[in-house]
Length: 372
Image: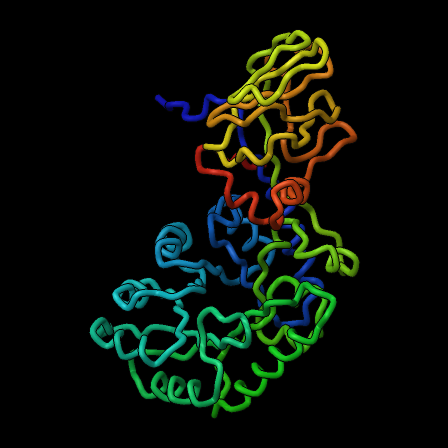
């Protein structure tokens, strides 16, 4: 007998057709032969990595990118044949698994290669992509003096295959291109210093792939934020080459409705006091679900109308102001559209003082992802 696992009405609904649309649109925008690396790290930015990856591959992506070895293990179980790249630092003891499962690793120092010697497999070689630190300041080599010894060590070893080289841009989504141009120049300088070019050169993140010079598409682009229908910045939104469709919505229902008399208060600290008789609805979502307390006052949609979260957000529940006495079970949209109104991830991000794609990342696993 199947056991139902999700009884609470709170859920994140992921539109996989939007994912497919966004990837297919990018496919049409790119130069012929340029591959799409679908970035599905952090559980596909909180959207659900396995289902998103399936949709992205269906629409034309040929490689998956994750951030950690644990993510790679999880995704390899679902995608045994798809090319996969770990973008972040990988401990050398992961090498045997990477070799066995054909997972490509990022390498960024000769020290890492030396420590890897204790774990080198005796059969399959490991594919590597060299990371150039052209200005992000995280991991990577940033000079010819670092790059060439690393390149030569990889080439000299029968245990490694130099499959690619890449960098990441810090300001590709900004109108001022000076810092971006400097990063491009450094990368090109180091790429030209190599005796031979690897199979895959990829520098274009989402913003670069969308609006920068097509020469920067190289052999592949990494499609992250806009695969999910989100803009890297308002500037990119003004010059977007094709429309993108948001994939994430957050929904719940009223579980209780009550009337609050003028002068009565509610919530922890009694921070909200009714100035007149009002109706209040309780919804089963709180900061343990990722709707943190700073979102008090954020608008939600009920009956196609905008209203607000009132009082302090609790761990598991929150209260909203109702325009009338709705019935228990009335749908409430926290992110998404209802009637003619829409609440966006950008609305939440503005309220929180952050970026739009941090929001789905912090919606916890307690909120089930439902796919359409």
